[in-house]
Image 1: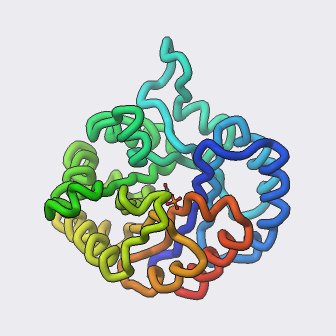
Image 2: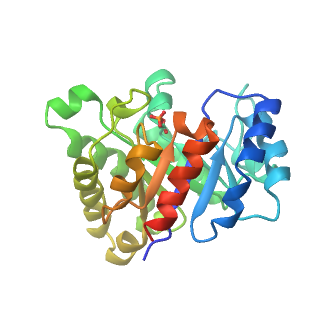
Length: 252
Ligand code: PGA
């Protein structure tokens, strides 16, 4: 049985005051001991949030990370800096990074590697655009994105990682992949990993992202290969995020 995993990606939203309020409203999360819950705030709030969640099982993740260790890369943050601030890992390959910051599979794999080398957990995001889905390319696109890491770093690289399937057409649009649509992709992704290492595939948590909310979480979590959620918009509303986390715990 894979331990459910839920993360709230705040994207470029929030303030110190909002973070404080949200953390207060999310205090019930401390009682959900059978799932892993991560908060993914903007970097300026890492320390504040880490301080507030100390002693609980809640973890802080970064939204991205540099593929480089240190040096003249203005504006970038290294894995070592994340670690120094108590951050447990980072998203890599989020579709907004791929789309707006031109991060290709090669760069995403390099970021994944940088996190592993620092002993941090990567969350590899994969997903197809609407045009790719309509062209019947969903599986080839998500497989290619996953293989960029698997072929260069081996299946053991996934040991400490989470894989997030996030169809680009479902992110922030209110459109969600149906549980059956998502399950089909999750099962295919697991099969891609299983071709390298069956045990690694069986243990890998594959979570869904794309307009996950309280009202659709339960249906998604009922699917055998959906092990949790990467939540965007709904993670900024405490009642929604709590309900999603509770649904994950109930799906155990
Ligand atoms: P959304 O975002 O839940 O607002 O669709 C998901 C994500 O981008 O991780």
